[in-house]
Length: 130
Image (tube, rainbow, N blue to C red; front, top):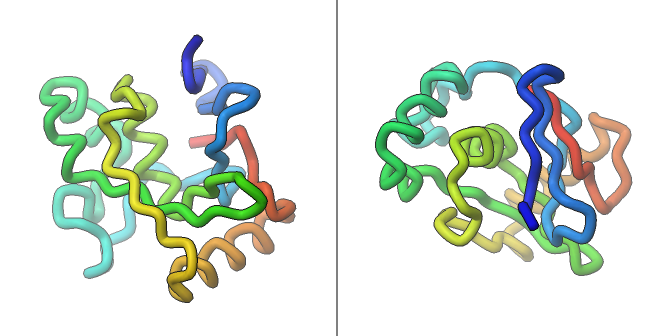
């Protein structure tokens, strides 16, 4: 069965029940950040444009890192836009560049802030709006 479901009408992505992954946010903006921490391939770009590029050239998925921290056995994604574009492009999760950042204070604090700002529990959200 699929790992997630994309609903273009409601502009949502939802991890399947039982998935070990969740999002640290309930929604993301339509554009990647324009900061030096954002990978050059993504910096300042619209999610729709990145999705188009990934669909045309799936090997570009290797340029999209997905950082997560583990809480109570759940992998909570920190850079949610990256996961959303990979999901929308139909890139199998086995091809994602997943990086376990558990114990890294920067990512732990970032996930804590995202969860708090989105009124989410420590297990995050299976659904995100884009």
